[in-house]
Image (cartoon, rainbow over all chains, first blue to last red; front, top):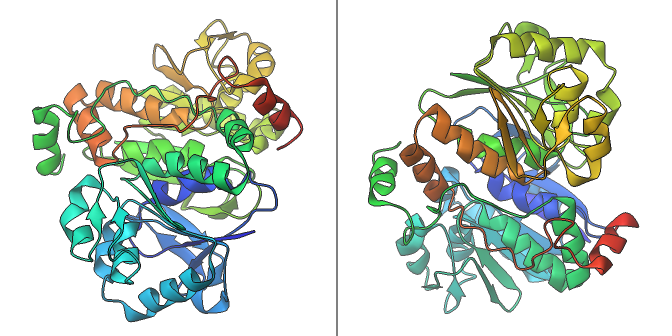
Length: 206
Length: 206
């Protein structure tokens, strides 16, 4: 089972690595990080680089496409080469998935028109500009398309996906392996829950 | 504020990237991934590489040391060069931290003797062999040493640490930025919660 994760400059690393860490446990999973050209791809703020081991053009098809988001995603919404590649991959996938603003790339590729979808809470308007209906859920399944909310939600999405690809016991075994028993020290993980002072600080750029 | 994350072959990527994604938001954070030699460092099962931008020997000191775990950590418990470097860094840190079996490296370096600490649930015996007392908590603060449980716990640890380094509002703003409102689809994230079938499957290697 080939799982492809496209990378681009200024992607968000946890969007990619969270689901990666789950899906890598699936039997016969082969995970490929890809980019326009192979080599190190920098996230923001440039301190971290993941290596792309394949070029987009070298990948004919995949079973699972997992598109991360990040500040760089918004710069690629009119990148015909990338969007065309996403459409070609989607044509052959069993599952087409995104994390955070990766859903904007699915939307820009025309895959979300008329569907419910989610994204980072700060990107709702852009998502809906592609004809999707934003749903304030952590993970949204629509046929073979699965979108997840901001950044850390990719872990939840990948566990739900692992249960569909394999079975619930497999997903639970993976959850145990990564000791995913989250205990956030604060309860500020969504706009509905975060104190106003935290929202104000984030709006100012922390 | 310099935060250094050491990498080694067969590290677990989420151990490093989870806390990275939180701590990078701290004002004036400079995060450096380091290894014996700069270049790409592979996790298990070899599909992902993070780039180390510095060599251990090039780093004189840091404010925060964050040691990830992974299968490779257990192979380094008698690596005098790495353990000596960890001790040198620890001598100048404000915070010395670990995720998952990263705490075994802190233990092997002699930093945990007589302290309470945590680690991945599967590594308790090794942790205690270094004179630490295992505590089944998600995050354990002992003076300036902070240990976190398995893999995904690094996100919780980093948010707690961000509140100590900055303040709670800053940590909450970061939690909102990464939309960390976890909703695991199953409740199997610790040995106390996981169904026996999931434990058995994991014991067989999934």
